[in-house]
Image (cartoon, rainbow, N blue to C red):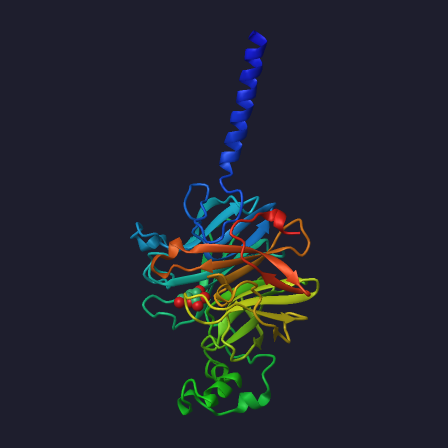
Length: 381
Ligand code: GAL
């Protein structure tokens, strides 16, 4: 009798410990579009973000958007979460915050979007770049900001914000475009002449001295360790791929224009089996539109558009399942396996915006995404 009691007690202790381990891992599958609780039970507040893998852990950086109850704008900045399994995320707090220093342009009221972090093997530093707009100026400034840290979870020391590639022509810019004297004031915005002039570098010339515009952005490290800052430039009409210096803290001045005049933003780049792929969106602000896929044999192009990578109903496809791309994440320990990460923006309460993660599938050598309301990593072969 006593033995049986002991056995039963042991068994219940075992079951209880299993339940408690299971309960710590609160998320067991990806449920795109639903609230995604972190270790404290709050929706993961890291939007327009990106993930890097370091020391066997994934780190997710993103826009920390003030929640409805937070009136104090000094909490605004870049958040970080860590995870071993991509499903359960620990809040590591704000790794770069706006400052109350009145002399700084990183002040409450400025806009910080799409932060991305990369690790520089040579310097041992973590480098963050982000789209930065100035307080009270909407999206006019079109700056990129840079910050650096010795530790992945920060704090990141803000260095400066600026327009890239001032005084440099794109590598794929014909001499006749450099010499053209056509100006913005000569053209009616939206007209065929204007469209042609934009393709032929109207805004590159306009911004040659003060630096090129940089809005939606991402970072990409190539096989040889060179890093690229990819951003929507030229009034969001053309993407620029700009090479970073070896320490990743500045631009070298070597850059190319990609898909001129085609209005792409939200770029997300990955390399698979020797081909470079890029997901982008069109430019409809917070409203979702149809995703686009482009392919290249090397990072500095030729990039070719190859259509919409979404598969599903017409309604799903024309709005990318209600999302906008932010990163295509390589899954560690698996070859050529990726996850599409997108944002479903909720403009009047951005902190509540939803994460749309979907498995990348392949169709005739090209990546495609389909809607799965509930899926896990076993879906990824
Ligand atoms: C989107 C962009 C977002 C944000 C938004 C503001 O097009 O991708 O990052 O800038 O516009 O309207």
